[in-house]
Image 1 (tube, one colour):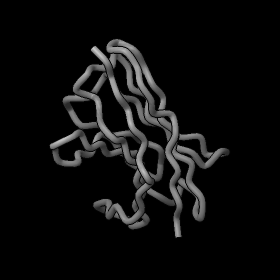
Image 2 (cartoon, one colour):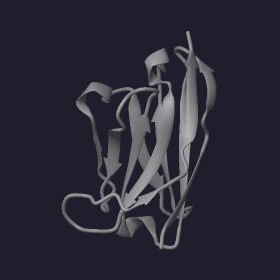
Image 3 (cartoon, one colour):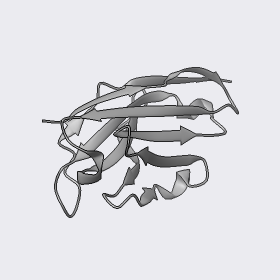
Length: 119
């Protein structure tokens, strides 16, 4: 069983930056595909980025350049840095993990962390 605990959300002004953390336990993150989703009010949950077992990051095209996902293996923690925040980035951000090979099956979810961007 994998547990994921997010932190780092909060209230930030437009143009600012945040770093979200996802501490994993129960399994080493090098054996997992890690990812970040978000869900804005009234919208569907969307995948933002994922990190392969080898540590390669992949992003949604529209977010490239503003979002950076990486990990610290020693801390068993994944991160998502978000720059040049916009009010439309306001959402609950979820860390996810997939234990399988191939197309990720997001079996494990964190509780979510709220990010609110003020104009």
